[in-house]
Amino acid sequence: MPHLLPVGIGLSSISSMHNTRSTSRLLRASRPELNPGVREVKCESSVSFDNSKYEMNSMKRKKLSRVLELNGEHPKKEVDIVPDIEDFRYDKIKAEASISTDGVPASSIRLEKKVKVSSVLKVVAPENWEAVLGGIKSMRLSGEAPVDTKGCEKAGSLLPPKERRFAVLISTMMSSQTKDEVTHAAVERLSENGLLDPDAIVRTDETTLANLIKPVGFYQRKAQFIKEASKVCLKRFGGDIPDSLTELLALKGVGPKMAHLVMSIAWKNTQGICVDTHVHRISNRLGWVYREGTKQKTTTPEQTRMSLEKWLPKDEWEPINPLLVGFGQTICTPLRPKCVNCGINTLCPSAFKEPSSPNPKQKKRGLGRT
Ligand code: SF4
Image (cartoon, rainbow, N blue to C red; front, side):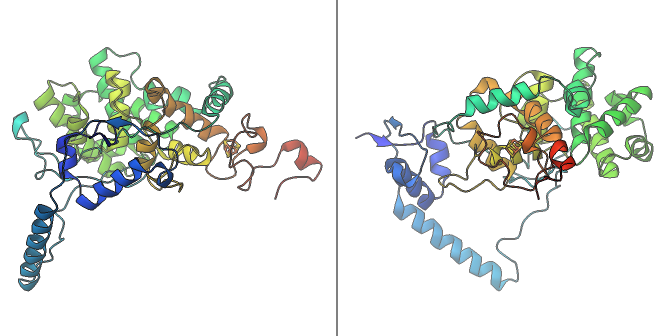
């Protein structure tokens, strides 16, 4: 009997889902009116759900929880993990335990961070998205945004491939909570001091490194993370950078946004959309993304990434980041978006809904928007 199932959900992932969540997803998939925008996709499935087993596990968990409470231990106590310095907090799935960086063989490195893989539930693309994207591309033709000349994509662009990859990693690690111009200048200073090289960084003391990258946001912690990442690159990758999302995420200070960007720029291997604060904000203003199964805006970059990846064609995944970052730096700014100058203001559902920068001509005539 054919079931209606999200495409691409395999046995292993299904078995790990919470039972009721799975059931509700199945219900939504089989009843599209409960999940607006979701296209039905039929596939054969032999998966069955063992309710009795789940209930049994639930009882065991409750019992364990009571025992831990009696012993004075909180059952939901989390193991400490090193936070990423990113614009937003990302959900992390802890794997086995903590990371070691000193000459540990690859097989024994245990990871704490993983990117959630989007469920490949097919979603109907937003109406007019091609016209909107085309309009943004036209507005971006001038290449005047800071990201066009000083973004991570430009780091080490004149260096040989291996050195360039390292420069991209270091630039990306410094870029969070920091303007492109500031990150670019820090990369230049590292380059002038011969420090776009993992061996040289390992031999440099952390304070010197921190002073060189200052005023990058969180420069002291970033100096520490850059030094640790350099050690890993040297000891495990022959001075090159990791070439997989999982191993990039194992580096302290590297979160999903950075890992996707590095995979795209350094390895030309795009595995997901790099969603930063600009991509997150603009995707929501354009009505391109929703929390799963709702018509509510997304609240985290991870939700935005997963929502975008459900409909945006894969050949747009890499260029969408610099495109929207530059658009966000120049026109669709976080505060006072310049809707009056925006070439897609007749298509955008958020046009003129936030206080905008006044049109210079209107301002002169005293007709500025309030
Ligand atoms: S119309 Fe305004 S809110 Fe919409 S994309 Fe343009 S600048 Fe952003």
